[in-house]
Amino acid sequence: QACGCWLHSLKFSTMAQFVSQDKNFCKARNIVFRLLKFRLRSEQELRDTLTAKSLPAPAVEQTIRYFKDIDLINDRVFAQQWISSRLKKPFGLNRIQLELKKKGIEADIIQEAIRKIMDDYDEQAIVTGLMQHRLNQYKGVDTDKIKQRMYGYLLRRGFNSNIIFKAIKTL
Image 1: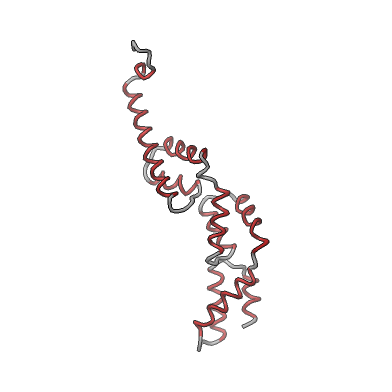
Image 2: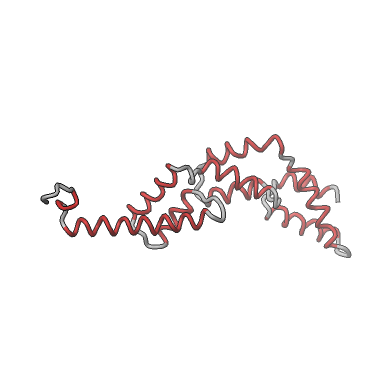
């Protein structure tokens, strides 16, 4: 304690606890960096992953706070990018909303992100295009059977049932 350093005044168990917390934070930080290297993640996804790795809650919270502070965790940006990538597949808004909910994104953030893309989004045209593309697989199949299969396919992709019905009527 002669040097006046605060570390010397700590008990060994407290120092060990700091070192342990630091190791856990470093481990958690490395996990998150590795995950974010491939794609953006929601806060809840990262929290669940870190918790599943049996990291202590303080290290998880410290890591989440760290990445939020440097703006690498941002649920609004994540939702916008997720919607953009899923619309390219193409998936419908119902499915995309469900996926975002499962990833822990709040409903108001989902709605805000969807409102932003609605000007450029024509679900009817997308459904019709998918149907035309898919019809090639059903040569020689009964028309009623085609309609059933097409309805199920488009519904699973998350499109609105009313829009699907309108498109199927044209078959």
